Length: 272
Image 1 (cartoon, rainbow, N blue to C red):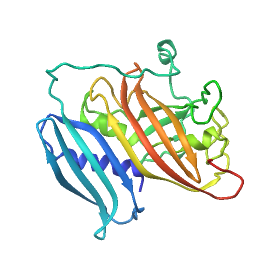
Image 2: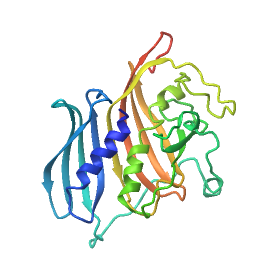
Image 3: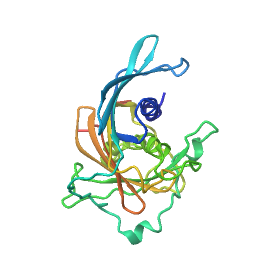
Image 4: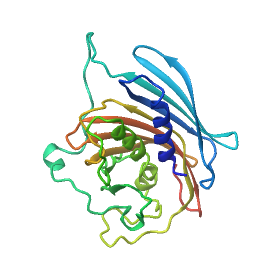
């Protein structure tokens, strides 16, 4: 069962329990066991806190009365802020506005595997961007993504926020492997022949995944999203991954922190 799908469904279930006008502020997920996709999942929502500005919900995803995934969600009242405020947001690091205007997905990683059951999105990995001096901990692994087919809901609706939750987990785990040159079952970045390399990882999975939203309007998930992914640390088969999700216009939509674990299928590679 895909982790991003469970995160989006958990957020949707929790969203139904908060007052109208509240929007998803943050989501923290801990993946403990892999559920059986042939058995229905049960989403249980617990009301942890209700305030005028924030509401907190705990969601457990269960099978046979056993908890497989635990999700904590925070919702914020979207009413206008009336007090003094500080305003700043980090810009895109490597893409100027003129470059963004010409973006489009030409090598969709999901094109050859897409069925009527999904994936309902397009993704393309862009060339790695190395900082000076070159260091795996500062290398940016950029991705462009787009939910497809288009979402019927208007801009600013919950559907677009949930779609970003879903998209936030794809091609993020690839980052540490890509910056170390470790093949993970896809073709090399920019390879128009789409010649896949053998996967060197037997298992790649998330241990935990956190996403913080900085805006709820001004973007659509079915328009092109730009994701800057970095990995500040990796050792002994584990890695931390940071992502910033932007709209084509440069609006910072969300930031993501994820911890992953990887087991190689053969020796010779290390995430150290």
